[in-house]
Length: 219
Length: 376
Image 1 (cartoon, each protein chain N blue to C red):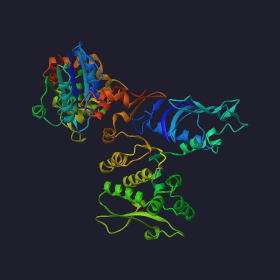
Image 2 (tube, rainbow over the protein chains, first blue to last red):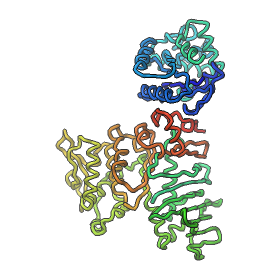
Image 3 (cartoon, rainbow over the protein chains, first blue to last red):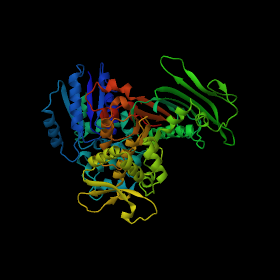
Image 4 (cartoon, each protein chain N blue to C red):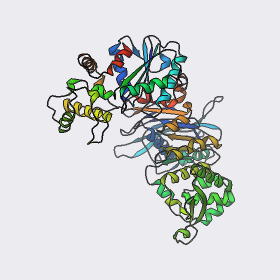
């Protein structure tokens, strides 16, 4: 099976998906470009965070249609300020005007990939050292409650996706000294243990439900 | 002058090594921040200064091939320094080359010998390149001229302010230019933008009108443009001090060049440069020209390059999707860096692969492992 993946984000998604997909499906191996797919490969194209994401999807569909050896197209987007269903409807309605010769899986990262990442309960110390993190925990405790329900941080003027990113950075800094998370350097999330802890959170609780889109797309 | 290839091995710990890079007529250097794009332009400019000036001296070894007046040349130069940081030329070789004939040696120089055109030369300074030392010789004069035709614009310092300041014109230069009508004289004059535009308007009217036309099509709110006397702006100086000025739609007052926005100054400077480049062909290098330019102004450059029949070679750096998307992939040079070593990939190597996807070339670039690999 060959799978072509389109991700929206700057750097992190591409790195994360490249690492996570083989954890879920070890038969799949990564190639640098869609033209290099042979057997059981996957390739990823990132829209680079530029506002032309729909044209990246359109071009990906044209590519998939022109190569006869691709079995599936996966499209991953953040819902950001939209609800899960609103974002899913937006993408489905856009795709309804296009013809794709293979099946398409849509992954809605509700509301961003950092929200999923906050699902790892091991990264939150029971008693954080950092005063900011203690404050964040008071507003919303991601260890106990579903990270997908994180509210915006009004005082710091952060929408929920920005809050999730900052929350994750502070949590990782607090737990592992000198470790920094950024969209260009999501190193810690690339480990299999990290991925497994998200799978556990999803399986054992009703939390990070949108993570199931990822599991369904590559299982 | 057209650079064909360039390679540097530095012998200084703070400097970078560049692999052999081949150049086309238009060259777009792309790469993440810190991959050596600016350094590449700097080192090309520095080595050209070392060729033609006594004072410039850099450490390393270079191999440069270039074409001038339809002849292909290769210049290899190696410099060294002793414990007291005295620097000298250790080795130099200048040859011509072609596909049909054997290479011809023009200069061969090492610690012991200095041979020019097959003849042993007397002892000459080891602190000066053979191109500078022998600039009057028939075989070297065109090479000296070639290295004088390399120009770099770098907008990081106070270059825009210096270029747009007031400056009196020299009557002697005016008479010389009026007689020669040679753009090369204006190109080599080192005059500021006001004076250059004045001379264009007086002597090269068609070129001046073309610069103004391009400028006004980039900034359509500019209704009138004119070269006026600095007196008009209260700047009194004995002699003629020309000032390029404009009038906008909404304002009756003339605005002098020094008061233009930095984006407008930059566009005017680049346009003027481009139209003054001598017809013999120059190497014109610009580093990240898009900084401080709005979308309306960013677009002017690719269109000017494609519209105007320009004989010169352009080496530009950019991070901007519009520019990258408007330059053919074959003209890209992608840089990456590990420590002090730069690695490059020519656009021609990517053209075939990129052609196999409908994704925009820019999207493919930012997904290319060579482009996104971390700088070590």
